[in-house]
Length: 399
Image (cartoon, rainbow, N blue to C red; front, side, top):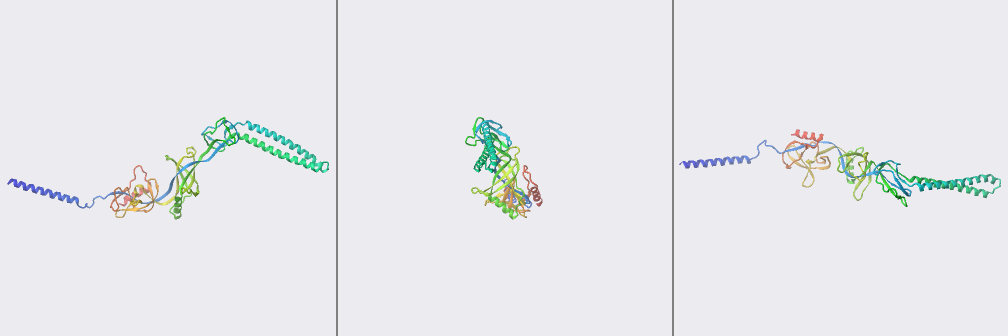
């Protein structure tokens, strides 16, 4: 009897455990109780602010002036007067070519000039003597005309001799080779003892003016056309003076410059428009041929929409999308049109307007989910500007 009572108690205990387990399972598999937490996402309220649109374009540096120093007379180089790679001034002596032949040529030309002047003096004196005599018919008119023609010929001879003297003096001056411009001179292309200027104008050295320095770069013609259309529609404001910033490849140091001109012809092969800027270079760090990046101001958007890069994703159709939270706290997909990057933010051209809430870094949240909003917090290394910070505060207060 005792065994039967024990068996009934065991069965009742097992049944009670099964019922408790079933009740517990029903409680767990039911709907979440009211007040359970929704997925939390960071969001900001879209606000507009002025935004200067810029483009970053590759370019190459060019010297403002390039002068190739050449020998203008033939001779032997006696001395080089400059240090290779140094800065030289216009008129500074660079080379000396043996002046002896040119000195002798000058003396010979001066001697010929003296002979011509003496002959001219004699002929002029004869004409003066014949002039009164021809009136009294003591000398025939033919003799007078012959003397007068001889005097004219000697005067022409004097002018020719004077030109020879000037040429000889000029060649003697060319024997001293001077810098045609101020700038930085490269390596010497000849050495002392070299014969230069023999049947050709031998290159001696190159001088380049580096301060200021030019930066040549190109911009797609289609982009220029689009910017002009935006200005015509009033979406973009043209600035009075186009500013430029230059950065060397691999360097964050910027230099301010100005735009000199934009070409009027588009390259048929590349569809690019050539531009040139000028930049100060007092320290001589910028050198011709260097690759640089040029940031050019394209205009000002008075009411631009900018959102963090993390808020933009690619949809299934390959177009950029954002997650927008409606008034009921439900996430919806929204296709947008992006413009240029501004630091860590995208410039949104269309698809968003001020006051809308955009999810930043949605994670696994999908469209149609109901979420709980928290203020957007930028990464610690980023410095949020005033507009982003205020947008985050607005999103927080909207909760």
